[in-house]
Amino acid sequence: MADRAYIATRKGLFELACRNGEWQLDDRKSFYGDPVSMVLHDARDGATYACLNLGHFGAKMHRRDAGSQEWQEIAVPAYPAKPAESSDKIDWTLKQIWSLEAGGPDQPGVLWAGTLPGGLFRSSDRGESWQLVASLWNVPERTQWFGGGYDVPGIHSICVDPRDSKSVLVGVSCGGAWLTRDGGASWQLRTKGMAARYMPPDMQDVGAVQDPHRIVRCAAEPDVLWCQHHNGIWQSRNNAETWEEVTAPLSSFGFAVAVHPRDGRTAWFVPAVADQQRVPLEAALAVNRTADGGASFSTLRGGLPQEHCYDLVYRHGLAVADDGKTLLMASTTGGCWLSTNSGEHWQTISTTLPPVYAVRFA
Image 1 (cartoon, rainbow, N blue to C red):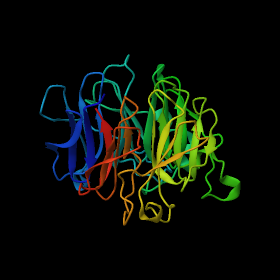
Image 2: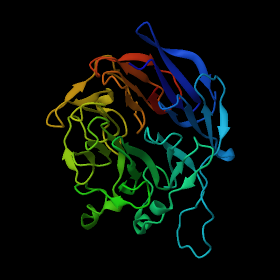
Image 3: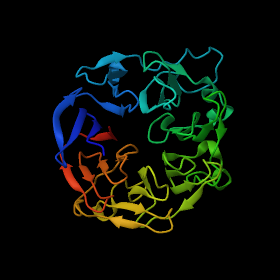
Image 4: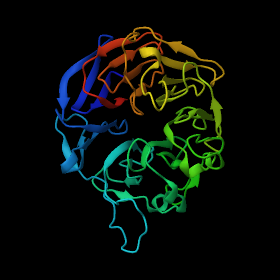
């Protein structure tokens, strides 16, 4: 069972600790006052990584090694100079590190980073250096990508296949889902079945304009993937070869999704009204959970605010621990809740945190 979790916020990195069965905010805080866009605890060696977005001073990245209390600054992904003859309208400059994941257990030191403006980077030395995955950056379809929530495209989801570390699926807003089976040498667009209903009718099934808000993979059933899309919820049972739409109660719009680590049929979502109204339905926070692959859902409200609640949960604002029962959820308005029984009831951790960008269990 996890006994520590991280909360990346607009004003620092906060930590949660479980002591004697009780979860509480720890006194330890890092990067106090600075925006932390992503955090990762690497179970392979115990290191923790924090990505900062310091505006005028740019994106920064730090690592805290296992057993240490000190953070050390490490390299950040860097784009090559744009060729003078390029017609690309995107500025080839790092705006933000939006996602960060560890490579497979057979790849010590390997990290993957997804960025704005849509580049995927790989490190083989624990973030001491980074290389742009040029094969994805150079796919012809990238000319169709566009910003979803930001002015430029961004990679927010990186799903490494536990059976094969060379097999990685990434999600792009707005640019679809892409799969490599050879460690990034080549890529396939994997969006068959998705529908971008914000596009004209003749373009709604175009893969490179899909906006998957978040994609997660079931660790024990790696062929099972769940996607919270801009236009609904989709599930794949064949490693993104095809996707099937699922209808949830209240609303199928949202940003966050988490999947049970051992049961691909069980997943959690946080519904919001719609793109134009990014608040909970009737100002009451709820979590939708399916335990049968989307055939039915339970709407869970126990312990969550049911009046005057306008919290939105971002893409990385919902996480499930390795036990499959402990969930952590946090919002744009500083609410943070934890459940130890699969979402049946939620404990309020705080209602006054800074806006939360990401939560992760250690």
